[in-house]
Image (cartoon, rainbow, N blue to C red):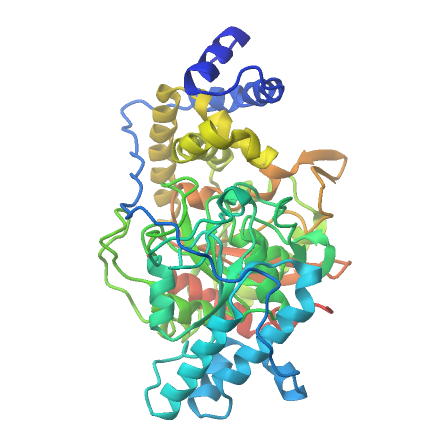
Length: 552
């Protein structure tokens, strides 16, 4: 494929872009960089393969504009935190639930403690876009009365959580990380928000993110960059950076993120958390701002595997309003945490270590794999050659779907879109329909080879991210003697599992010499989150990495 300047300008003009905008030259240069990606797909043998057709967007009632709640910085008054309260911020949801159920701790005390923590840390971390202190305290008082009256709803009752600012909550602004939508408030709840509310969880606010979830670093010039609690001069990761920093710092017990190329697992790894991307179709996408329909995955972020399982119990299940939702039996994920991993076949993809990776990350991941072997897993090396094509296939699909979803935004408000996100969104306009279909055919090939890989193993293991967190504003990092572009580097291990939709989790598996977290990624067969959670929990139970806390 080639695209000369004349053809480029013709397409741009027909779409509605301002071809006199100086930005158009930068866009042309960016579009030229996509040509090698398209050529890579052309080189694949796709004979007799049909495309895996992309899913259409969820049907949603058009949200109406209603007044947003008080913004960040406006506060209800809360009591000063006691020493006992200080201990509450790092208790897991499972631990808090047991205390709340026994009436040893009140939901009011729990929420007050976390609001105080947010007051203390937000100037440094910038995890939230919208805070809901009045709403949270009212919910805590209701929860306290319900529990005192014997109406305990379950292990999330009274537990504080945050939502990435893509999940609709009725009456609460939903910015998608851009001030273009600073005053937009939906009149409906996303299915995820509703199910967590029904389980008794208490929403503290909406969490910061890379604009439109289109970025892997967690940088946002409009609402402020997200900062890593382990070192606030470093990135938290993206696009769910606010979710990562909030949970890692004790501002929230639980959080929800979305993951289109690694946006749960990358900040999870960089912030020292557990982050689960369930199988595509396991959790509802209804009421969640899309990036790329066929690769978007909502998922939980927490400090323990048990907490992710508790959230899955509350959220998983068929939703007729989401066309990608599958009507399958939903297990009790906490029961999956029981037992051991003796005899489980653990595959180490040798191709993962043929791409750039920091030596200290490789060492920590290899030690984690050795630990799993000592705990009973049968470890073997496997080859997955098409892994090296996953980035190209997924990128083409993502660019086209993102451009389609945000087409009107691009036409009306292109100049107001965060520049790096704008380039990626607009680039999708110039990818021909035939190339998009070819990418979907290549996806079929990728599916087949992914399934074949799991004939030999039960779980795949490898790094989550090839580097540790780096300074905000960095565009390239040096690994060995090679400078590598961060956008492709950061998602090289995570994006393949958005392309095939298989469940994947990150768990802490070590620290760098600078005391920065390192993550281990574990991947299972479609809809086998149980095995993924089990092996992650066995590893967590036999190591101490998840108990480490940032000094903030």
